[in-house]
Each structure stands twice: as C-alpha cells, then as structure tokens.
Length: 268
Image (cartoon, rainbow, N blue to C red; front, side, top):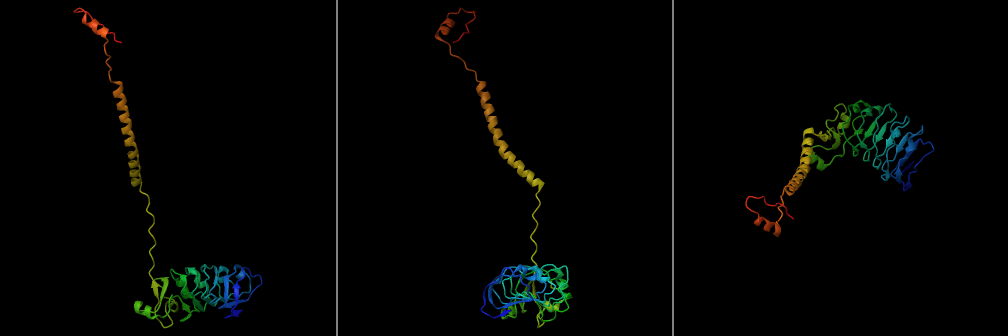
C-alpha cells in the first residue's frame, strides 16, 4: 500500500505472491495492470486511483473475482471493456472507473454486480444503451451512481439548461433515477443514438449486364469495322483486271489482217 508518495518506476509484469490489497494511490508508477493480478484467491482491493501514468487493459478476471470488494481506477489510462458476466459478483461494493480509458458499453448483465453500493463510469469512453437491469442493483442510491461526462458548469447550464451530459444513448432507464439524475435531482442529458450506416446496396443484375454489353460493344464494333475494311480491300484488289499492253509486233499484225479474219490474241 502506498498513497501520495514519490515512488516511481514500472509496475511488475508479473505478481506471483498472492495479494489481498493493492493500493497505489497518487503515485508516479507507470506500466500496465498485471494480468495475473486477479488470478489469485485473496485479492480484495485494487486501487490505482490517480496513478495517471498507469495504462494497459483492465483484466476481465478482476471484475468477476469472488473475493474482490473494491476496484478504483479513477484518473488512470487503463482501458478495456466491462465484460458480460455469467455469475453474480456480490462482494464487489465499489467500482470507480471514472476519467479512465475504459470503453465499450455497459453489459446487460450489469445487475450481476448485485452488491454494488458505488458505481462511477463518468468521463469514460463508455457509450450506448444503459440497460434496464441497472435499476435492479438495490445498493445504489442517490449520489452513488454517476454516468455523466461533466459536472456542474456555468457554460453547460447556459447552453443545455441542465448541469450534465452523457455519452449514453437516449432514453435512459426510468427505473434508475439515482443514475440518470444528479445528487441535486437534475436530469442528465443523454445523447441521440447515431443511426447505423446503410447496408451496401446489392448489385443489380440489369445494371451489371448493361455495363458488360457496353464493354463488349466498345471492343467489338471497332474490331468488326477493321475486319470489314480489310476484307473489302482484299476483294477490291483481287477483282481488278489488268489489261496487258500490246507489243509493236502485235500491233503491226493487227493492221495487216484482212477483213473478216480472226485477229491474234497473243500478248507478251
């Protein structure tokens, strides 16, 4: 355990000794949360609050650990997602992920954290639908559940006529007012769900056929024209009659042929 000290360095990549508490609050340590941290059977508290150089991914096993009572990663760079749970985690009382890089959505199985008394996921990268099952966590009450991305602000009050806004989509569940309202009873402004992108249009057989026909015509018509031109040229050459010139002897012989006799037709 260390709080507000000048301790620095890097978190070890592996922690083999079983831990009951890991509390490193407002320290200068960097590195990632060890994956083996929550594989032991004794861990009860994981607190890296304001250790803003700690990054990596939150091991999902920490959120489903049988003995864990507190997870506090406020103001760290730890990312990852909140996994869907298939069993109850009744001993987890505090889950503070505010101002971290945790992303994704709140799973519908969030009510498996049945023992929660404090939930803070404000100023994270979480978005999407807030499940109705959040209202089934009876330990949460006014002031112990925060979903908004901003606290009281004069600018926000003037622009939106309210104190807070959220990345979670409208409508927020009506059965969990302690999560959708502030401690002073003011409603949190939810985000309008972005419409999904339109599906890619299916290829049209008719349009594809037309394109193919045009391509064939663009290639075939010039080829056919060239072939026809070549064929006509050859026919014109072969059909031309070449008349040979008569020699002087033939000309003289023609002049002495008596009238009525056949004329010679031999040419050189």
